[in-house]
Amino acid sequence: GNSVTQMEGPVTLSEEAFLTINCTYTATGYPSLFWYVQYPGEGLQLLLKATKADDKGSNKGFEATYRKETTSFHLEKGSVQVSDSAVYFCALRGTGGTSYGKLTFGQGTILTVHP
Amino acid sequence: DAGITQSPRYKITETGRQVTLMCHQTWSHSYMFWYRQDLGHGLRLIYYSAAADITDKGEVPDGYVVSRSKTENFPLTLESATRSQTSVYFCASRHTDEQFFGPGTRLTVL
Image 1 (tube, rainbow over the protein chains, first blue to last red):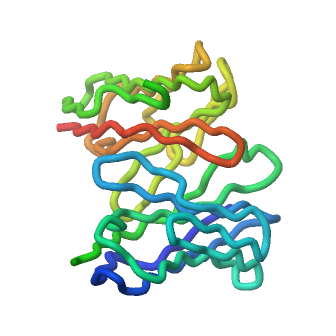
Image 2 (image 1 turned 30 degrees about the horizontal axis):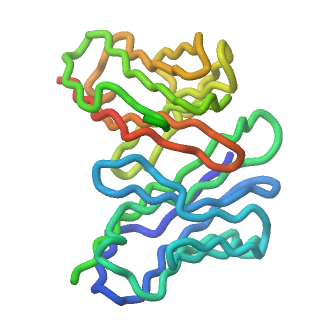
């Protein structure tokens, strides 16, 4: 079955530091890949997505590239802000069959950014 | 308010009681989902629905029941709550590639 593995957290950074959160996946076919963000006390929000190999998703200064050869979708940001403190989830949506657009999530990575 | 609403936002109940968590969306999206969020597990799919009167099990359906008589509502019922069902529950709907999540219900079973 499909699975997503994220780097263990929590991650603590100083403001303006570079961020990488690793995500690798296992899936058959050609899944779509997503990063969701959850701010304290809220539901998840879509941050960015990529639907095919070598696509780069980007939003709010965050980027992730769909690497089929390494089955990875690592999240990066060049300069984090305190307001980026949140939980980040990598997810995939399988293709075909009875997937019904279901998402498979990683375990989440807690990011804390200090001033 | 447009979007997905969940009620209640917080609930404390006792073991063995029946509990229903409500989910309402204003967009008329066909697909809806229920997830539970637990530390170390991310979000796990409980049940999903492709349309009114069409529901199916997800990854962790045991102890839960869903119904969907109207497109906009997708309630989740715990028939006899257990301590292991203490969790944060999220409802979501899907439109094209994106899932839209409600604010969550924090359920504590004593």
